[in-house]
Length: 245
Image (cartoon, rainbow, N blue to C red; front, side, top):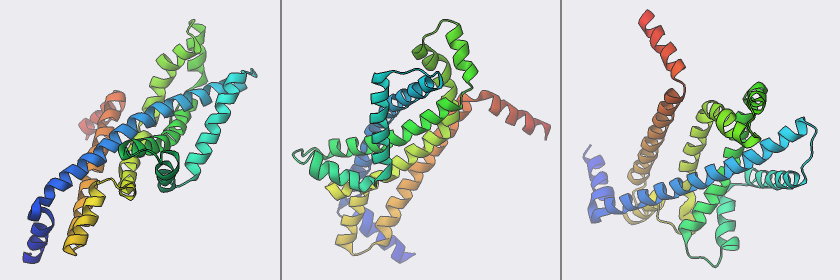
């Protein structure tokens, strides 16, 4: 116990290393939040393009502009989902944005573009899972395709894809742990620096593992709460079952 407390003191208290930890946590959360926004926006756009293209194919209609956009989206999805995120980060940092010193922008673009590919397929699968009768009903009421999607289809799809989106957001949070390879001082970099100065690996890496675990548990709880809000009938059924027992 005394050794544990001594290691804790050396890792977090001495030289006020906890301040650097807080700063690193801020970097991690900032990159995650910004990449999350970019990923959702990009994912919605790509999913909308691909779903619209699939809808036209079902109706045996053609749209040259949509065909080109769908082809671009397919190339994007193939490349991003087929290559490791670390490689993408290195290419973005050393090749595409080699002249930029803004590592936050580099990391945000990399993780946002990467996450967008997965979010797009999650949203697209949710849209395709909604009964076609819902779309036909919206169109029969005089709604345009965009209005039908935004007011009828997408709200129903969100209920189905929320768990998968939650898992993608959690994966995004954990993936940001590699930003230290481009010099960003996140919590992983903090742990590596502490280990290099104290020659103690157990406490700093155990500490950041605990931080990630707490963040993931918090996100999981938040997603579960959102699920209950979007599916009140499910929560009501659970409550009725508890009352019976």
